[in-house]
Length: 262
Image (cartoon, helix red, strand yellow):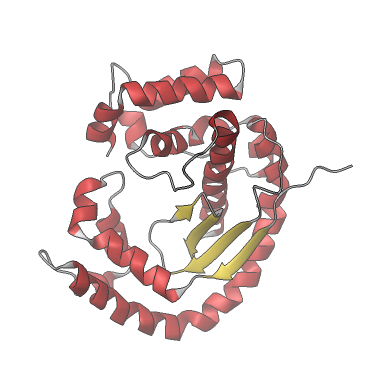
């Protein structure tokens, strides 16, 4: 009997969510607090029209208004193209990603249950790819190249599986999204490399994965975070031991991680 695995359903992103996410990622307060990625640079590169509309000192309302005006027009024009992409991306994920999910669940020693639910991939206008681990949802730009679709899908689903594994180990009294700069958010991002670059998973999705670049270059407590994580992965007997050790490392070095890795 085959083990059950989640399905992945591809849909078009809600316009209001798309606007809110892009506008929120351009707010000065957010940019000052979360330096894990060059959000503004990526948004302006993907949507150069916004670079002429967003100015230093703009308030939350004005930024939202500027994004809304542009994205309503772009959605109206590009919606037919998004619609065509839904089936194409669905077929790609069904062919490449879905068969790899059973291997990923085994990597985390996690059984698929009804509480996990299915996964939704939304296509819209994005420069970085949001996710919600509670609802097993992630968002992509609808013109993302195939290689990046596969890498992004595995990256985000890895977060979903980790979250369920962590709940199975520690419970989850608060049903809320792990957010930057909480330790669980760092755990999600730090373990992407060793858990997705296994020989078994790469046989299904042959695209090497990397965590955020700063995890390979910043020196925290004498070595880079990724050096610690890779060593910890190699020297742990179980996935539970690996996750616990990495989480303790994050807790012990959280302030330095925030300062040096965003």
